[in-house]
Amino acid sequence: MEKQLSKEVGGLTKKQIHFIGGGQMAEAIIRAVVSNQTVSPDQITVMDINEARLQFLSKTYGVTTGNSQESCLAEADLIVVAVRPQDDLAALGQAVHQFAAPTAAIVSIVAGVTIQKLADLFGAERPIIRVIPNTLTDTGYGYSGVSLNAYATQDQVADFLLGFGKVQYMDESYIDIFTGFGVAGPNYIYYFIESLADAGVLAGLPREQAWKVALENITGAVVMLQQTGLHPRQLLDINNSPGGVGIHGLYELNNSDFAAGLQRSVLAAVKRTTELGAK
Image 1 (cartoon, rainbow, N blue to C red):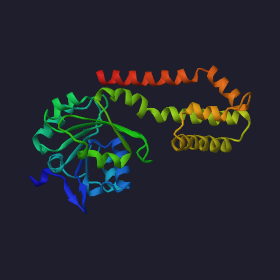
Image 2 (image 1 turned 120 degrees about the vertical axis):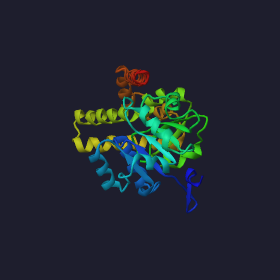
Image 3 (image 1 turned 60 degrees about the vertical axis):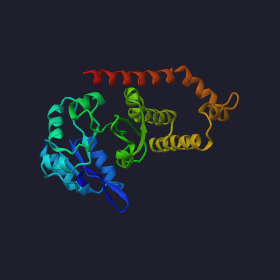
Image 4 (image 1 turned 45 degrees about the vertical axis):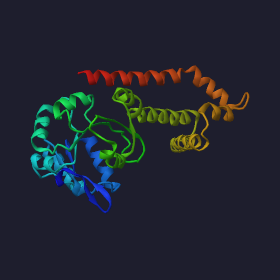
């Protein structure tokens, strides 16, 4: 029974974490939790069909990649399923049924695969946590969206998940929306910053100077919103004097359909997420 429970080391929960799949998102999570010292490398095992990939992960992060799938599953407290939706999830489910402890929790980052599908594959009474990871794992910023089944608790995964960013727990019905809005969110920000820097260059500033100003304005504006607690419209009103520079610029931005275009982008991303999940 002791192997089925989380191990306690130095007063902190020490879980054995097994990754099934060692792709880019799995690596990003491993890199973050090891770098943040949330999880030590000797707590992590990884299995992947690509031997070169396993050698890279072992050499780069010190994780264990040479053990059998059976032994890794038997020792795991958390089993992170990090494969593609089209991979043989049924075979993985059979292996988990055969070798993993009943209390071992499934942490799935497989796009589009619902908790119900995961329960059908890995066990109806097994703790299942569906995670939509953020792509800002190395920064400590960004929310991951997390949904739990009735047998899982936040305590089982909170320390692990917080090792690669922040967490928002939500009903699974919001997961597709969260994916198209929250996880894809950095894409919209990157595009805006690029466009803003280009605008500075178009107006006549050197590229390096325009880039620095764009980044500083983005960072400062976020801090200003957080520190003041004001609505963006209130800060716009403060910055825009009658007939001034700011209001003239904002007028042209309004004419560009910027807000509606951004909103259409989010809706398109949410729609695509739903389509992928239905396949």
